[in-house]
Length: 511
Image 1 (cartoon, helix red, strand yellow):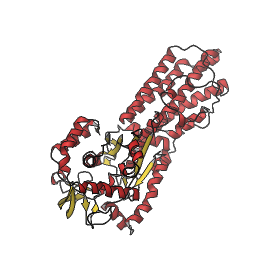
Image 2 (cartoon, rainbow, N blue to C red):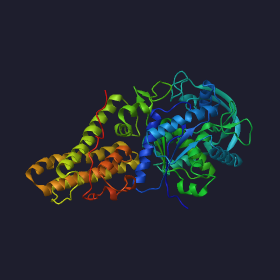
Image 3 (cartoon, rainbow, N blue to C red):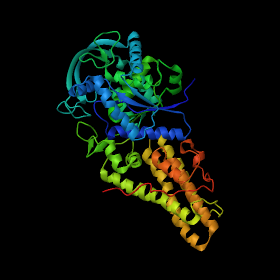
Image 4 (cartoon, helix red, strand yellow):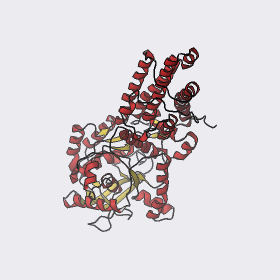
């Protein structure tokens, strides 16, 4: 069985603390992509999970007076609550403390050891526990600070098993040249390529000064460095070494979604490990920018860790999912503010979309007793423009495949705005007053049919709102069964369905 599945992943998240909106940013983006691919008829496997080993987690547990496993088990429900809160449609959830993962990690690393890609030596140098990363002296900021967290690094001196990373530098450069889409956006690929060209040093693959990790099978007292453990989740969860049929259908991954702060691990260490083991590399690693609050990267260490529930409680789940992808270009840094989120809610959602839905369904209710009429009137220039707006939205959403969510949503809103402009141009209230029944029937049908398409196209981003809109339209077939391109074609609405105005989709926000 060959690959027949669109496989995408989030990073697996450290359980040293509860999730904040920075974690949710990546997770929602992955969910939108997964739902988008399903809407296009793909078989999808969407993986997320938790990274539960390493020194950072061990210290968090110690601070709480717990064993590391107790700490992980206690924190885990908060991460799964986030998935439920944000309506994430992941197909699997991997914990790196699971047997299905740990056993495969040992087998993979044993293979590297057996073929001579690991050797014993002593590491002396800086280490940042917050990002579980080794750094060269030249990479540190003034005052021996980590370049990511801007906090003091620690000094290590320990005997480790090293991975011959430098051996695979030529293969990595060949990979970047032959497959320029492997690392995206382009600025990140250039960054990674420059790092490799500058010369790679071999990297510690084990540690000895603490015991919370996957044990090294050939050397007691050693555990695997957390990144050699964590990165392997992408293949262990896909069936590597346990279910080869499932693995062949899913691997290689179509895209790993990550933050740019962990780019080196995913775009240098990870492909080098896979090349060494003779496993195909993923199709793409996509590194998005930082989510900033007050000019600072979202995080626990600088007290900017806003919980998703705080925003969902005020703005609702649909605005939460929409806002971050519409407000920020996904590959770049972007700033969150309460004020900009209120603006998006009021302008895009309540005014543009919510008022449109309410207006159209009120007219169908008032003029045709809630029943959608057949489009008996002739189509003219206004209908032709509405058709073009629909085509713009359909073509524009293909930007989701490039992770250009902001661009896709901008084009989708061309249709939302187009329906509003169509109503103003055709003035159904005037047609009703004139008794122009055929023309009025055409306008009402076109408007409701356009709302049907809007419900389909918004469903990857705002699944709850889309389902509510779908129910208002009185459609018999299930929204989750809709598939593009058929569901986006004009005229798909069967006349005679009974609409229901119901409550407004986006009520006025509380002060």
